[in-house]
Image (cartoon, one colour):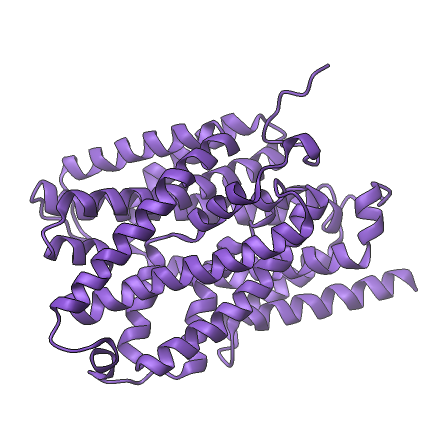
Length: 415
């Protein structure tokens, strides 16, 4: 019988399902092009001078690229989704925990993204007065329309994600860069001088921590996309480049927007440059790519838990994210803190399990467990430590604890 599941929901991606390197690069760039990262760029610009900003991007980018790149390699070499990898490392039923966590967070990101598009457009296009306490019905209508459109494209899976990425990535990169250059030219000081203004009270390490925290949770879902790459090497390289280029652009857009226009993102800069329609286009496409990837990931996770059709789970995820969108938008900081504490420990356990049983993963001989309690314990303890210990990088603290717990437990089980 001919295989018709183009998204390979329940089995590894075979050679026929692999995509070109360019397609993978576009998909991964689209994944990292997210307007919320511009908010982090604004924080970095407020607390660091130009040199500190660059070093924070480099240090945080290296850590983030190492983490996501490794997961990208694993996904591409094995052809497995995050949830299938979790079934092998956490157990068939133990995988419900990471699947629930990734679904919960990615559906949340989807909702945040919807409101990040609808609320600014409602303010500028309709002149609506939107506050954390109230929003006119027209604003909710925009959220609903955006939710329907983005859910519809995610419904069709990896093919749709690829098409949207080919459209959105060049448009966002070109228009955003042009707007940023125009903003700098209209300013009364150069980039370095403008960065030097204000109170600079953020250290490079703390800045790098913001860079890591901005996408370390979403980056845990990297295998869901790189499994379509031609090889592990391609998955690794594409992921590293995409996270460096994509994230750095978003931080730069946010930083320049803040120091030259006083806004949160490139949308406001483009409005100040009288580029309204281009601003709406860039904002919409920017959010659309990441939102579709988030919804796709949420659908895969729920499909693993409920053993239901992925497309139906994508629809369910879209409905939940759309309904909760406005609330998530106004509670974004709290949401981000939850994300940073939960998913990195999952990622490190997937990595350790894979490289300690690599041959068995690849030849399919790995014996399935029902629940790997050491992996579960590692995630729980890692999340607690990441939340409570404020020294260093919370994500790395959580991963370190999870790794030690998992490795010690595995060793004890063998003995």
